[in-house]
Amino acid sequence: MLNLSDPNIDDAKFIELITSLPKDSIFLIEDIDAVSMDRKQDDKKMSEQTKPVSLSTILNSLDGLLTPDGLLFFITTNYPEKLDDALTRPGRIDLIKKFSNANEYQVGALYNRFLPDSDEKDKKDFTEEYCGKSMAAIESKLIEKVI
Image 1 (cartoon, rainbow, N blue to C red):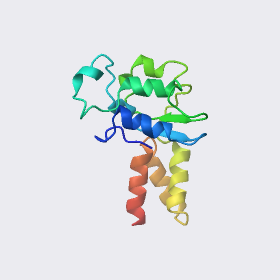
Image 2: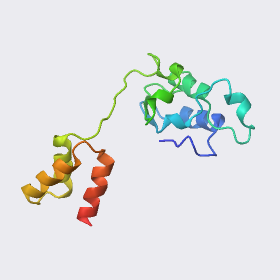
Image 3: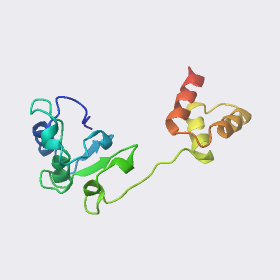
Image 4: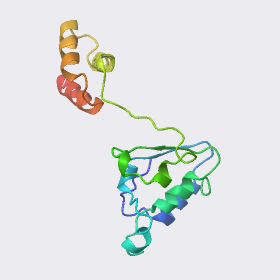
């Protein structure tokens, strides 16, 4: 996993890290929307000393030019509408999966993980209240209940 907003990660460091990965690895880029999606401005925007990873370098990685065999990329974003079409075209992104807020089953299953010995009425009340919320919000509430 690599944090692209780390000021120590530039194109050269990104290439160095990605080419050193072993065969059949998984590489996670979280919050890809944090990368500048303006390909024209990438080279002009910042000095060489503070220049972050460019979209061009990421695109070349996804194309396989810089990557070891069998490398799987997982990319997350909260803002898919901000992503450049060049990033999301077929061949670079093979599958797009949207994770929606929790349904009743998911809330109940998470509740059982945190509070396996609790009363069914408490579980039902919690599930009704938190159905449709994000898994992170539900988890946070359950942690409060456990502590």
